[in-house]
Length: 367
Image 1 (cartoon, rainbow, N blue to C red):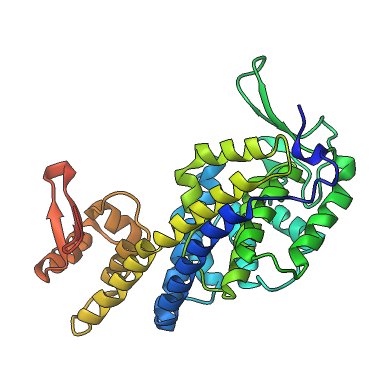
Image 2 (image 1 turned 90 degrees about the vertical axis):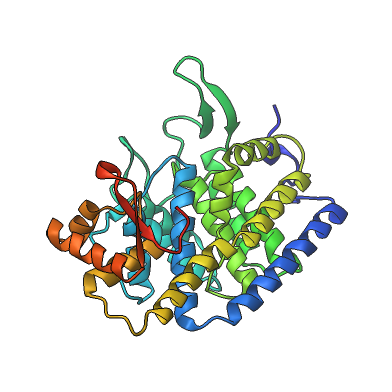
């Protein structure tokens, strides 16, 4: 079987200009509309939207790899690094690392990439030096000491090799070529370049682990260069998570055979367009939150109520109950019930369910 990197002069990717440019024009139109909408928002609303997008992006990029992160910790870490208001909760080291990587990529998008920066991202992803139970090489390219880098599925003895990456001995010059491409100023549109960089990095698979997350982070950095803005208002990783099976399928197909990457670019741009069109979901929650506090400007709330109402607009796992309220606010059950009943009286919360199933939602939300 011939892999894409085994083609002569394999860096010379090609694609059907007519097909790709037609879709690219649709994405550029959506991008322009979104940027115009972003510019009309105030700084506070844009900052809250940025936190929402980065939180979603980090959570979904990790979920693609089967890793579930704590949403509240991710959000708190992002807010802290952006200098925004945060509840300063304890954050696990691996979450701090992935947040550090994403913040660097999207807030410093215009800075050149180099080996040290990439290796720093990798080290941040694996602060303990382990991936699960396995010790891995951290902060440097893989050495294949345990055999070639392969993407494998199936149980032991029935493994199926989906892909085998280039030998480790080639990585220094292969990665140097990719880094040159990322930093080079040419006529390739950044949206197309984002797709190419994503694919190219996955083809090389330069690290022992974390290659998918770093590839998507590099793509986010290229998308930020296209927007020419460090505010993000759409999440490509969230869309990829929704179509995870087709994502792995198109990557596997593209990694085998010719240098024609038309189908990959159509897949990438198509899903990028969907993610941009779905940005209203992120805008919606942020705008609702801002509108809510404007409407309630004359109402008196205690600090616990302010904290919990903000959580309901931002990140809240499962249903709101008096028990959860008491735990999160570090107060008694009676105090939690009093806080909730006060908000019901003020027609802000609505009670649903009975007995053990009793929970509460914002009065204007959908149950």
